Image (cartoon, rainbow, N blue to C red; front, side):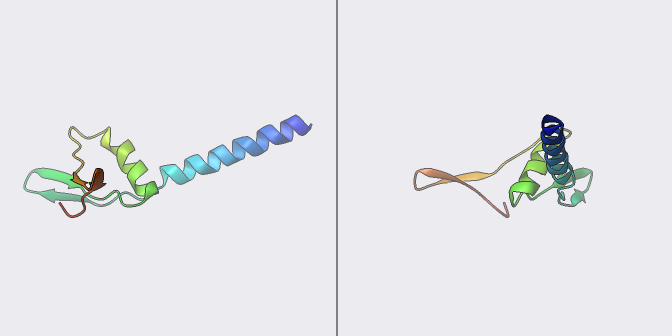
Length: 77
């Protein structure tokens, strides 16, 4: 009985965290001429959602800059 309760509790936690991940809000898709793009990825939830969404797009570009021996993401590029 104790094992069943532990497995049920663990499954519930996994389910809730998966649902939260699936419903992370994505930035709005912008269209210019015949091109569509999505810009954003600020915060852990949004960046994870965008990485998952990027698998459906033909091209993904990430902008970074090398500053003082580290790489930093560039916003507004």
